[in-house]
Amino acid sequence: MMKNKILSLLLFIFLNHSVIADEKIKPIIEGNINAKVKIVVYESLTCSHCANFHKEVYPKLKDEFLDNGFVSIEFRNFPLDIAALNASKLAHCKNDGNANILHFLYLKQEEWIKGSTIEKLNSNLKDVIKNQNFNLNFDSCIADKNIEDHILEDRIEGAKKFKINATPTIIINDKKFEKALNFKNLKKAIEKLI
Image (cartoon, rainbow, N blue to C red; front, top):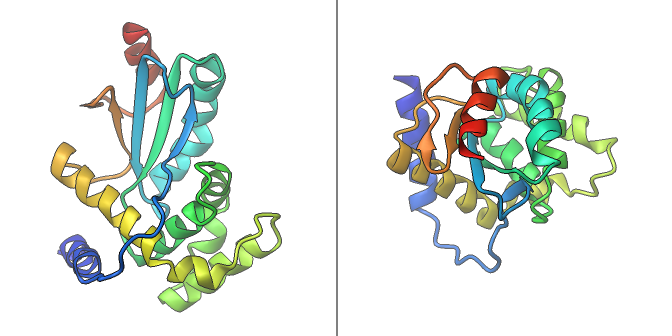
């Protein structure tokens, strides 16, 4: 019930924008973009399972497959709430396709995810990133409707194309990964495709 309300709110926000996008938002991609194996991860920055993916599974994927050019990985947005939407705006704010801010926000998730209001969560987010060398203007990032549209388009596409209803959801070469999400299972699936 709550997820339906959140989705309805996000769709309402997206459909009621009259802003014309000035600049295309670059996707956040790592690895060889011409790799034979392309992984897409639909994730929400407030999702603890997504944070675990970034902390436990992603480093092994990077070492074994990304750094060797066998795989590319694209991190797509599937915000489950307004706090995740705002955090995603920060991850995309520099519009450089770099995943550093995204990885940092997952690493520090427990520090900023505390609070019962969006104001408190935003304050926590602002505090977590202010001492970093990201050179972000928090308020302008959060207010950027072009980035917001990009994030909501990711979510709508994921729901329509792949019937995504939970995060993280992994897509490998345009097919939904249905096994338990751990490095062992991902490694087997990737090795079959290389």
